[in-house]
Amino acid sequence: MRILAYNILIIILLPIYLHAQAPDSTYAERLGFPKGSRVLILHVDDAGMSFDSNEGAEMALTKGVSTSVSVMMPCPWVPGFVAFLKTHPEIDAGLHLTLTSEWDNYRWGPLSGRKNTPGLVDSGGYLWSTVAAVVKHANADELEMEMTAQLEKARSMGFEPTHLDTHMGTVYGSPEFLIRYIRLGMKNHIPVMLPGGADVLIQAQTKLPDATIQGMRMRVNNYGPQDFQFWTISTTTVMIG
Image (cartoon, rainbow, N blue to C red; front, side, top):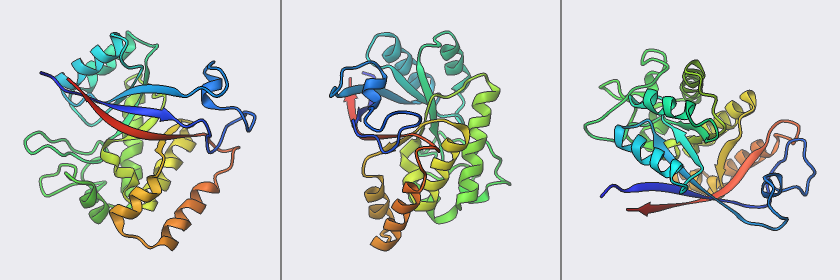
C-alpha cells in the first residue's frame, strides 16, 4: 500500500501582511469565499523525489484530493513532474526548497555546486541528512545561493513556482536562514509558506535565548506591507493509505 503524506494547510484568516489589499481583506475572501470562511488546502510535497512520489502527487492532484504541490529541484525525477505540470497549468505548484538529503541509500547534492557551497554537503558530497547538520556546517550565504540555484533551475525548465516552502523545515533552523528564505521570496515576488509558530520551532531546535528570537521577530516584522505578502498557516501531516 502506498502511503501519501499530505500537509494540511489551514489558512488563518488573519494574514500578517497584505499586498495592495485592504487591511481587513483575508486570503479566503480574495479567493472568492464568503467573509469569515475557513479554507482547507490539501498540499502535496516531495514531488520530483522519485517515480512513486511523482505518481502519488499526480494521482492526488488529478483525482480531486489535492490542489497544491511543491517540487524538490535537486532530485532526479524532476523532469518528469515538470512535464506533467506543463500539461496541467491550472495546478498550484511551488518549490519545496531542498537543503537536506535524508535517505541512507538514495542521495542528492546541491544544484549550486559542491565547491560553491561546501558547508551544505557531507564527506560524500551530498546534502546533509539532518537539519541540525545544516545549521552546524552551513552559513546563510550558502543557503541563499542554493535556494536561488533551485529557483533558477525551475525557471530554466519553464516552471514558474507559485510559492516557496521547505523540505524538512530547514529554513526554520536558524533566524538567519529564515530571513534569507523570506528575502528570496520578496526579491522574486513569490509568496512564502510560513507556518504559525516558526519562531517557537527555531528556538526549540537551536536553544537560542529569548532575546535572539525576539530580534528575529522584529526583523521579520520590519518588512512592511509595501514589500511582500506572507501566508500564515498551521500545518498538520496526515498519512493516507
